[in-house]
Amino acid sequence: MAQSLDILARILHSPTFPADNVEREKLRTLAGLREADAKPDAMGGRELARLVFRDHPYALRQSGEKDTLAALTRADLAGFYAAHYAARDAVVAMIGDVSRQRAELIAEQLTQGLPKAAALQPALPPVAALSDPVVRELEHPSAQAHIYLGAPGVKRSDADYFPLWVGNYILGGGGFNSRLTAEVREKRGLSYSVYSYFSPYEQLGTFQVGLQTRKDQADEALRVTRATLAQFIAEGPTAKELEGAKQNIVGGFPLRIDSNRKILDYLAVIGFYRLPLDYLEQFPIQVQAVTAEQIREAFARRIDPDKMVTVIVGGAHAK
Image 1 (cartoon, rainbow, N blue to C red):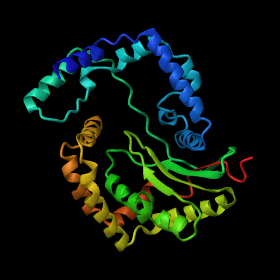
Image 2 (cartoon, rainbow, N blue to C red):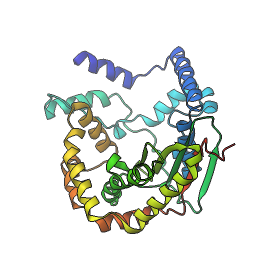
Image 3 (spheres, rainbow, N blue to C red):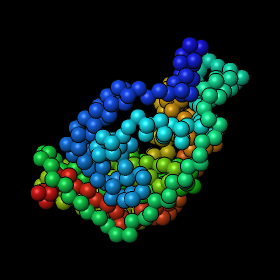
Image 4 (tube, rainbow, N blue to C red):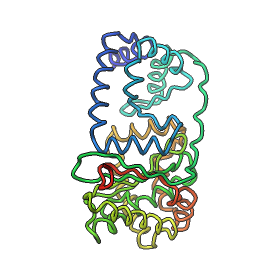
């Protein structure tokens, strides 16, 4: 392990950004972007983010855009490293047969060669609420219509996090146990798969609903999806739905932390978002404490079904 840590420390402290490697990664990423831009799911996701977040940085793809990526230079990477990599901001997550004392020594080894304090970065601006509904249709020769609805949702640190998390499990995050699946797939056969989820970030991340359906069923599938969402926001879950969701979430929670890899991922999130250190212990307790009224109120505060972005890729009207 000592040799591996030494190599990692040298990479962190003195990256060289070889020009050949930079160009190779640029070409690889550009090829991936061109491939993604031809796929209806990638097209829909990109357009949804652009319309939900508008001029906010969250509207940009993590991998970059073709024009900015093509112009990227080795000097840009070196400048970003100098501006953003600092011991002050480092989060080191580790798991394994290591004592607290040894863990602290490893963390010190990995961070001591970083600048003690890079320039303070401006805070991310808040995400503005949507003032009006937006509908965008994109042409694509796919056999099905890909439909996405979205809006700004929740921060990782929000007090509404657990009511929204449990509520979304009932709405569209619980697979065959979700209300959207029951209404769109089981009762009407309009889609094989329909889902919803929140992506919590430092600022408001995306609330998204998605499905695929036959092009001639797109209007009906969208109508049922919107009606189901609006009813859930207005009324909240039933007592039976809430009890079933809690049982499934809490009962399945051990599977979320059944490997070192999964626990390490959670530790990284806890460190990055400065969550309480007992977050994993508190997770099932917080879930059990959620009430139906908290879910209804949280969704009503966060999501306005009449002010959402709708993106349809390959629909009957997208010509």
